[in-house]
Length: 414
Ligand code: DI6
Ligand code: FE
Image 1: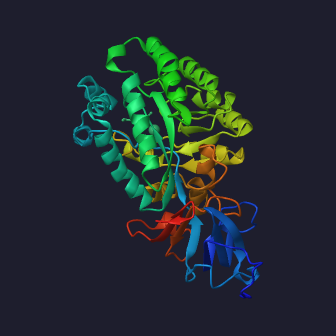
Image 2: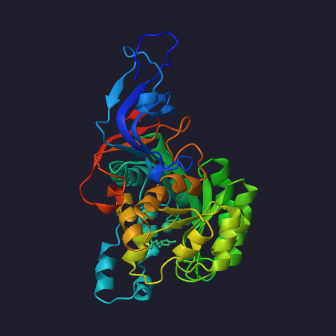
Image 3: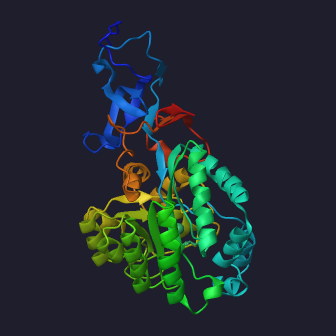
């Protein structure tokens, strides 16, 4: 590494040396896109140089801050592309009831389930929701997560759906993690619209979406397309309204049955179909043609003790990108750990550790429509996690001992 003082040298904000880098860049023909004995330079929040350390260009050693990674590993910052992070209340008692044999239906009849979270969230003010959600965001951040998607969906009226998205935006403005928001007004039918789901969908499409879009509170629109959620026709109605507001769509699809929600997302060239345990080959093919990402949510699968697996082999056969996310929510996935999801992606869904890491980096970025992150490459955001690991597989293999050494978000060490 020829180091001299030369005014023609690049001016970097930071140079990281002595690193093994899992770039996750498919243009590098190596597992994990790995570059060993590598260096990476950051300038103005972006990756300015990346490669074998022996290929480093001359740089000004006196003005360039340098950090040695001491032979440890760098990966892209992790991306959690599906969370319901902003909510109030707890469903721990329901968890206990269910384990004592009380059914979901009985709990719902007692006003429990999503309805109880909606009640608590409507009663909570911005500050209370912010403080609770920030705690959860810190937990993900502590595990190397640098981008998080946060959905609404526990307000179910204009005022409270807007409140949730305002809190999510506020979190993004006041936390190092980059927050993307998704409007999920069509998450469940609120009590006041019992037996009037079409009227509620009209409220979602004609009132909520317009206000949310004009206030720039959502980056995407999602629907729970399910026999216990909203029909395919109602989902189509919401997607058409989203398109009118130039908002991309995604869908909780085929979680408990096949309502062909994934097919509908593909028809709208949507970003992702999520859960998809009951997805069929026609849906897989449609997703493949549209470039729609399959987001696996192993936390909900595990917590609900589901038995039907998503069609992983079909997804891989048809080259559908696979992402993994926490689906953090109080009812079906109260599990605030993206690394746990990587481990479950491997142990429950038989993904390889490389597929699991791809699922929380490159493919998770794609599920959010983001092209500036998810791999380490010159010109991409310097969202970088520095780990004390001997191999990237360790991130899916080992749990409970946090191996994160340093985390940069847009080039800033936090
Ligand atoms: N699918 C789920 O598993 C969650 N929402 C959804 O669309 C359930 C959310 C809850 O039970 O609070
Ligand atoms: Fe969800």
